[in-house]
Length: 394
Image 1 (cartoon, helix red, strand yellow):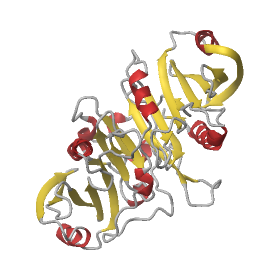
Image 2 (cartoon, one colour):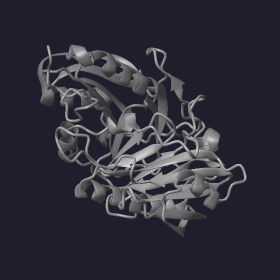
Image 3 (tube, one colour):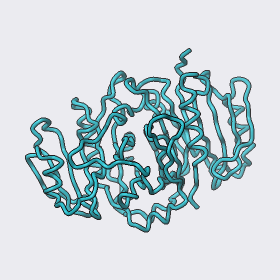
Image 4 (tube, one colour):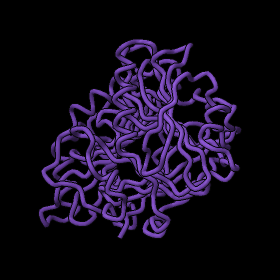
């Protein structure tokens, strides 16, 4: 039986990415194109996009966490409502980096070590969107930027020096096969980094507009992280191999500096964070049909200040307002705090909650659907890894 309920896990916290890429993460050679099969399947569903608009805003602003230890460049907004991404998961092949991206966009983790910044899907039945990919290509091994460009993009007719993250980079354009394509290369601490706006961009004008918005925001805010940053986030969990599947798959780290927490999530999922609403969405899109209402998602929400009320009283209020039948509840530890696990609130498809207090803020993690058989394994896997890996930074 297929239920149209949306698997959802909502969690509102500051998350931190561990600073080590999966041990066997492969680097793209300068002559090899990025594998974007996973990335193309990672467009958000229509229901999750609607949920972004429907989430209530919070009256309390996020905590600063360790944001003051980050480069000023990526802490300074480039466009209204843009969001911060702090990437530690490539640190075993570099220092890591931070950047800002348009507020309605999503972050995708490719099968290698790339990060995709892309807009919401533009059509219900297609993986059509635009964005920008950032990926380390590998050691420069003595090559100059021009030599790296010769190997990676020999067809580019135009080269222009630009500043990227405080270093001199090359902007490449004039590609005969795609006049809209742009790429950039920069060498930092002997590693070649690539930016491109063609790997995940559709051919429509709307998709190109999304790609342009991502490109401009990312390049204007991009900064490499100082080595000292790793110590600040040493409590974050390292990447883990997913041993429940027959192929190589990883749980990768996510760092939320504004909220002050870290967690792990499956590599083939996408992220969306709304700092103003203190809302993190993690979603597994359905390959080939990215508006499938059964797509597995997880959300974390920092609902409101506790107002001095005990956790039990706050949870009772929620149950009174939202219960539509029998509700199951039990005490449960989460992020080192006492929490209350609740099953059975407001959904025919089944919704699971964990409520807890941290720093006088009332948090909830929401997972759904719990009653859609064909999605159950993915939902349980997402719920388990997020709730078991969540760490707040002191």
